[in-house]
Length: 221
Length: 221
DNA sequence: GCATCAACCGGACATTTGTCAGGATTGCGC
DNA sequence: GCGCAATCCTGACAAATGTCCGGTTGATGC
Image 1: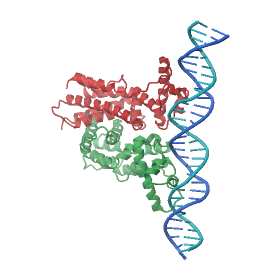
Image 2: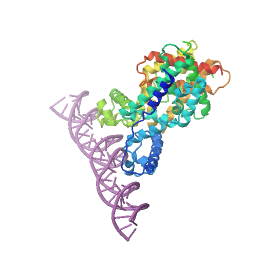
Image 3: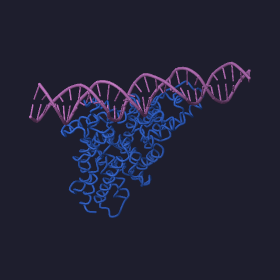
């Protein structure tokens, strides 16, 4: 299981976006991009405030200043908006995934996790929240795409952990650890209603140290 | 900060249920209890399957075999159903809270967490899932009740950890750890779509060991 | 100044939703 | 068998929602 292979699988999984409808009413591509950004920005705010199901097209139109009829010249339907928002916020190209960081052995485990969480919380907070909250509203095919992506990520992550710990044989606990670390990515976003008074940096460092200890603990059987 | 005081605060927080409306149409209390159970059971399933907002009163009536008009003789409205369901599943009296278990020093840290997670996952799985998913749909006052309860729990938990670790002065990281452990309660329920092939016991033990290591790691600065 | 066409929008549609009034039904005491 | 109170349910209402038809506006090229 060479390192390039890992990267390939990751890259493949990464391109596994949710399928966005294409609409051929408006032709000016720059305009389309503009309006879609307006729409998705408004939708993101609203989905986070009120949830997907409780947000109406009218809400989105009002906040984005797009006409209720015109909005269908830019998006196919409400679910299409959710897909676009998730593609933007959850499948971000500009955030390194943890296995990528871990592949560089010059970075200690704890520091790697720290870097991962810091990036993720800074730039993907909303996306994480949205993903965890909106999974039930996705269509089965979209949920499948998500699962494929996540499974590939987990596989690479557990491979990297395996390598880092210098284990020789399989250990099912690695899968659990991989899932745990991924889950911790949601800790900050999901529980910020409870510890809004603590500085993010303190949280990031404590969680990273904890995660590293958790992983190291596997070495001692 | 005596141990009895801790228990008092916990008991107080525990009684902080969400307020259920009382309706004075039907008088037979046994009947009321029966019907409410039917309704809440059906609602629980549906909320988990389709989410709160996407579930209609008609859905609940159909699955619970309660008439669409009669249902309002037993519950006040849709939100009232959610409150009752959460009171049943999330505020359970029959699951020990972690601070209670930790108060008994004869139980090692890891084993205490293990016991907590095992109980919680066996009996509160649905409740946990529901709570995390439905918080956005609660009315502000209900969310406040939840937050009060959770804050009290976190305070006690971090006190117990403080005591267990034998620390002498305050450490803000204890709050974070307390929140982390509480968050891990949701790990099994929330990510079971990804590791359905691993046996629960393996997961519980790995997570508990990890959590214990995470906590111990604080001692070594 | 006019024709053309891309972009915009007023208003409406069919449906679904939460809710409940008021009549129908049931079971019980006598 | 009758009367009565407790429970059930038919059917409806107003409001809200996703969607989009068909007309209007405005800029551009001539």
